[in-house]
Length: 197
Image (tube, rainbow, N blue to C red; front, top):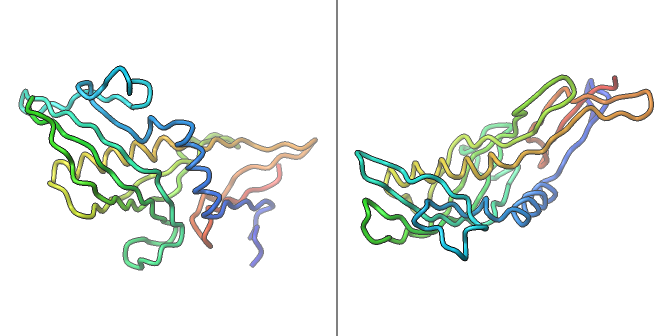
């Protein structure tokens, strides 16, 4: 079958290119890899972090400082049971501190986070939209306590959810090209297909 299948246009970004895109995104915006609540904001880090409100449980606050390494994407992982067709994985390390109920901060053991993801069109109008990443599940190694585990999954979803690639109908003279299929995770690349207008 042809690259375009029954469409007029095919475009694909391979795994290396996708990881370069993530590297460029997070190098230009390092705050997306560093998440803190107000007690961990200092004069020296205030510009390089994403600040979240303190979490409150039964009237007491829970604060944190989380640092992630650059996520690395594997579009065709060799893990069989972990991903389904069209899914890919994103691997990162997390470390930091948590402060419970005003007590002194405690270090969070460094953990490897493996997220199962899928490419999605998050906003779509005829011929325009934004291609994004949806984190479906996360595995932590070693596993961390339940509440901390759930919080880290939420933050990873925020980090990768910030990666958005806008697209619009391409026009060349009297012709236009419009996205119809995808994005799909196939053949070790993210693929899209469209038609001429």
